[in-house]
Length: 304
Image (cartoon, rainbow, N blue to C red; front, side):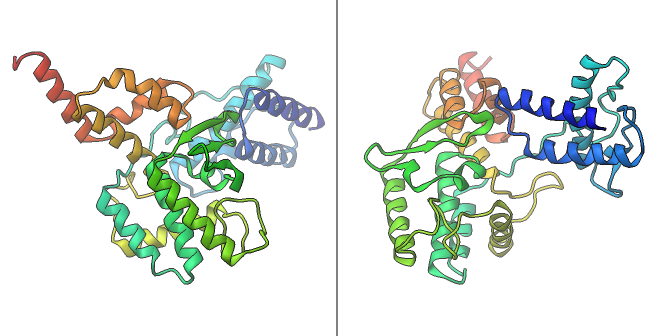
């Protein structure tokens, strides 16, 4: 097993050098090797581990299998005897969650429910978090990782240093967003004259927000705001504010008669996508977008 653990360290080092974070993969693969150790085998020949725990959702099991497959493929280059589980061996992998596209009314309802939180700081923190996600399209992990000095007041920018694949980018802010952030900083600094954390958004203890706690609070606000799932695979999540931002941007471009093809590479860069191909997903995410695309095609064809 020492050999496999050494190989895992080398595998993770290689993937990290390519810009992947792999925190979840590293944890799961360490558990996988412990499982193999308990089974007294030194060869990756089973996917039984991927089916644990039982029962679990198909999506979770499929994700576990994909993590093992990636590592097994790496091991196969070192030892051809290593089995690489075939894709699709377990159901559930490959299906993308249907984005819940928030309307302006939905967002306003979430912000209104945040007023009911226990302290003014907690209210302001959640309102600022939700608003920042809605108007910038940032990933929630990127927002939670923001330090106070990542907010460039003089330049009117947010500096994202902890983006996916280790990439960094700058996000220009509207003046209203600037004003809201400065107001939040004032409330936060009044609560904590001596900062407990370097974070831009803080908890009621002055520490950096945790994704798990934010998720629980967000789910509570969703329930109180009366936002319900539109299907089993379409439920309101914080990440869907990012989808909503992208769809709204494309929709406004369509309605203003803009060049959507020229906008997509810019939107891709703004969102921190690796390539515009990752942004094309948003084109199929909303019926409104398809309707606008069809209307423009009909106009181009002269009604034919």
